[in-house]
Length: 277
Image (cartoon, rainbow, N blue to C red):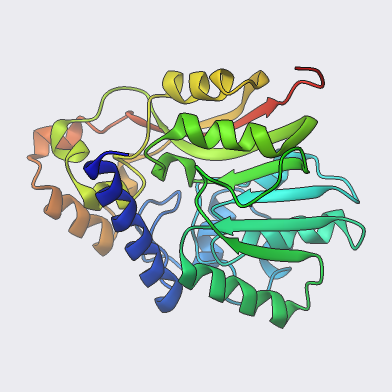
């Protein structure tokens, strides 16, 4: 891993450690926003019932979609959440797979893991566990997972190809991948790409849509399909104080900032691990 990748990973870990401790959302479909987590969750596709069904403090307003909505989970399945945060999607998955199923959340931030475990205790979730680890090197055994979900996390990983290969490794033959994430429709201006602040805000770390889908296919997944896609609006960065602070830190001119229009999309992608190699 390059020094740049290490520095970016350190920045992500430190940023989300602060989010976990302060219960303050950063990366979401509204990008960096001061909106309440419940309102963000509704905006990106969660129902009111889902918002109310999890322990208080597990929804931090992080994410860019609802992977649970398209995951088609069944009772008894084993689910792995990549970048599980405070446990929001894990707890929703737990309610569907039931006592005969299990859910594993993996996160690289110790503060998030601690918070998620506290939430699991509060909600008395017996079939959910959280493990500290990186997506590029999952603390999960081969061929043990029925479905992998992830929500606006893989875009933060420097080596996305390795992340998808790890996902492929731990899935059972015939297992599914269902991720919500941020992708680029066109190259971002250099002033964004060079900003660690933008990276932690889920913008500069994103890859092109084509590159993202190619990385999934290259890992071995079949039937790679974009199930849903929506434009990530520019005003998500300009209509709130935190977004304005990010734009100021980027030091981009009005003309440069305008180049972001239409450059970013939120997608939900499905892939299948073949039953035979």
